[in-house]
Image (cartoon, rainbow, N blue to C red; front, top):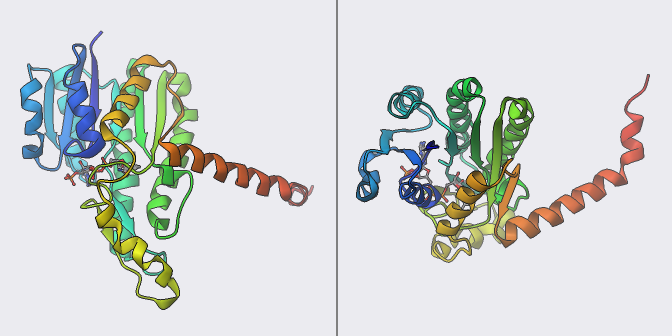
Length: 277
Ligand SMILES: NC(=O)c1ccc[n+]([C@@H]2O[C@H](COP(=O)([O-])OP(=O)(O)OC[C@H]3O[C@@H](n4cnc5c(N)ncnc54)[C@H](OP(=O)(O)O)[C@@H]3O)[C@@H](O)[C@H]2O)c1
């Protein structure tokens, strides 16, 4: 049976690789979205009527409604929503620019939530669907200068885990994807940087300043990441709740969670004291 996928942020990176893969499948309709339709011309070579392109900034409510309406009118509904659009920000917590932080939250958290809310009624009605939310390895474990980015991705984790519990019985799967650093535009043009100037944070200066130079040498392969997401959605029932991808995501999360578990166990007796009759 033909399935319809809607993917946000298909102009570059994971979204573009996933859209390219989906566009070549016999049994898939694709709603490819971008902030500039001209960024989607790479799909023309694969289009034989199964691709709809829409203009979509995930912070724009009218464009969200129009995109979902297009999917329904062209293909009769949406089976898989991939909330991929996102951006980063490198800065220490104290030196972060509030406007940049708020914008990142608008895209990474509230944009993802608005897309999900727009698609849920039809998934509930059809009693099936898969929602794929792009978190990050930094949604499981964090690093200096990544605090606010991690805050957006930890938010995606909490939001998605609650949603998993709310919609599992309705036939809807929610898969959270947590990639390590990968060779996309994310650390480059998709991430604003504020280089530390406070002397106490001097040790992080090179880390932020050097980010642009290291773009392109990240270990993660976006094509393979797109394929892994595709395989998990199409071949695994139910889909995994979490999909950490890459060595840092897997090992970093395991060691962070082991440490967290040990900390929580270490104060267990004290925790119990808080509940008094
Ligand atoms: N690459 C990594 O190392 C990495 C690791 C873990 C998680 N991630 C996450 O993976 C997702 C995809 O990122 P990527 O690595 O593929 O980076 P990317 O190449 O920079 O792609 C980001 C995509 O998001 C789009 N976007 C940005 N703001 C948007 C908005 N307001 N509305 C709609 N689309 C918007 C971009 O569109 P424009 O071209 O118009 O800017 C682009 O298509 C993000 O959520 C990111 O946080 C990335």
